[in-house]
Image (cartoon, rainbow over all chains, first blue to last red; front, side, top):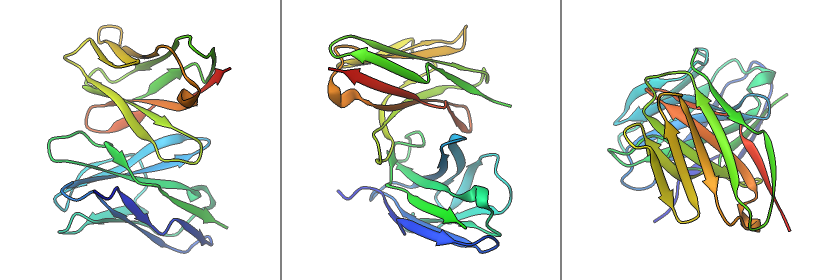
Length: 113
Length: 109
């Protein structure tokens, strides 16, 4: 069974631009959660989607948004990028009935210049 | 706000010895406590988890204990091996999952 995949793996943007990251969960997994990882702040929860509905949201500004499609694939969007948004963005998927964060993807490394 | 404190930030252990990492949490409503291992340049991997209605859980060389009254939980790794070298993260979850800052574990030959 294929693992969680994320695209793109690396991305360079400039301040003020917006970016969309994609996450494809393991087949059969309907929960997708997103995380930001930085050396300073560590791992932080962004949001969780289940069956196309946002189930929980972390403490991030409204510039961070996401959605989930009927095939459980998820995207997250960051608008008006700031230098501090440079991070590794990870997604994870879980089976129905499992807690969030069971299987992580490889992440997308976003650099904002 | 909710917080998870993790100690120590760095831990060096002789191969074959045990390692213990401790976490405390602030939200008494937390009911799920996972532990993750992240090797350099790799994705986090869930290695063990425990729910609030259980005091201890063991999986081969890894065990987790939970003290709900004191709001702390610990990861125990016995008979450490070189492949145990990694950063370990604890987390606590009520509706949102909050992570500790991580412990870098070095296994010394």
